[in-house]
Length: 275
Ligand SMILES: [Zn+2]
Image (cartoon, rainbow, N blue to C red; front, side):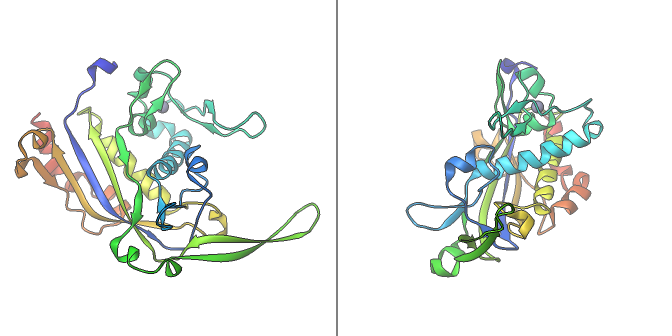
């Protein structure tokens, strides 16, 4: 597949809430979050002071969890292996990630196809767009002191045994953010696997963590879906409501959507098979 063969058949619009099941640690800033997108995915809006989850860091976290999964189980994805080939850290502190180097390779790669690849030779544009996740209206109407709190944390230097008292800021458990992920259908033979892979990454995140100090219990999140909808390319030309297919996911957890995938997505399958 070459870049000139790129096509567009429609979009999946996935909306809902990210619920903080435990406190979420607030990180330093966008720069940190954007490198690898893993360390500080919750930051404060510099103007309102309200915390939010930048789309780039949510996407980065989903990608890194899915990369590790594919790297460990390549056969499940019809791959020989998935290499961690690029260092985005320093020589001393390596942070290795996977990136396909060409458009051609990325078009067959379960990771780069969904999340994109900036290769040395050519780029593969991401098929998903992950918007910034801001607090829901309900949470935005609360005073800031009820949403974030400073928590003292003692760390012990393992060499000198000295204790260090620092204050970390966190978002309280229960807080909810609106998320939106858009997936572009560009290849009829791949949308099903891509959507399944995206859902797998979301399921992996629910049993991982968002933000820092995950091993200390921070950052447990849950996805609650409101809208899971397919809009055909014709919808964007005609506005015809019949060009939209709602996937009846209700409030099903991510893994249950994967379990019932064929049944839930039969309407979309019918629509896309006619193209
Ligand atoms: Zn790849």
